[in-house]
Image 1 (cartoon, rainbow, N blue to C red):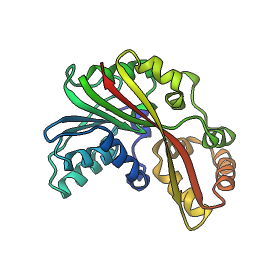
Image 2 (cartoon, one colour):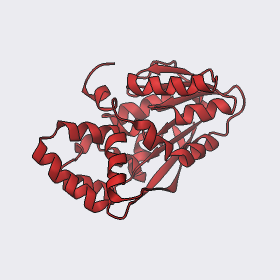
Image 3 (tube, rainbow, N blue to C red):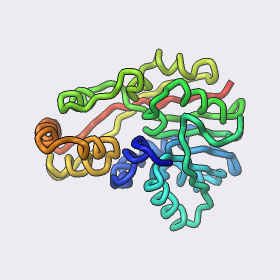
Image 4 (cartoon, helix red, strand yellow):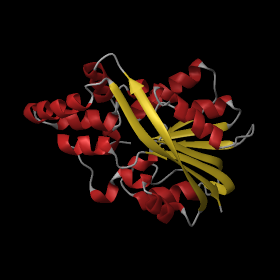
Length: 248
């Protein structure tokens, strides 16, 4: 898939930040209550953190993502473990799968970044069978959101991914299709210094990296001052929301 959206998720060393999500990937897969042979779709799979774990649990797994770059890394990881996972290029707003094709549908900080929340929610529901499980994570509006705004990086209101962290918004999107439960969690990473932490985040978070590359030298320098001040302690902590659902 070509275009600016797919391009924005390519090129970054996403596997580095994805490694810090390992406990969250474990939690997501555990929440699916998988049985051997269950069909699982990892939506906006990135480098395959959830897909790999689901396959290790004996599931029949498909991972889909708009970034050819990240899919290549996911395939390499699966091949290294001899896991038979299908990794395919596709858009979570128009998933290339049949109705009710999967027993479990997961997305870790992925599908929530799609521009059209309603279409994305509809697709997540469409491909999940009745009684199947949904597990997805998102970031609520938080201090990191405000730091981005101070740095000059904002989202259009209609496609702000942090809307998925709002219970009312999630219920409006998914409540007719799923019996929902929202759980809280905390993600934390540390580095030797604020500069080291900024290097990790700025090179491995694809949309942030893409945004920085689009800016003039002056704008990028001012933004980096804001981010470095925020990361001065060398610690980055965010709360996240785990959205769980059983397909009605």
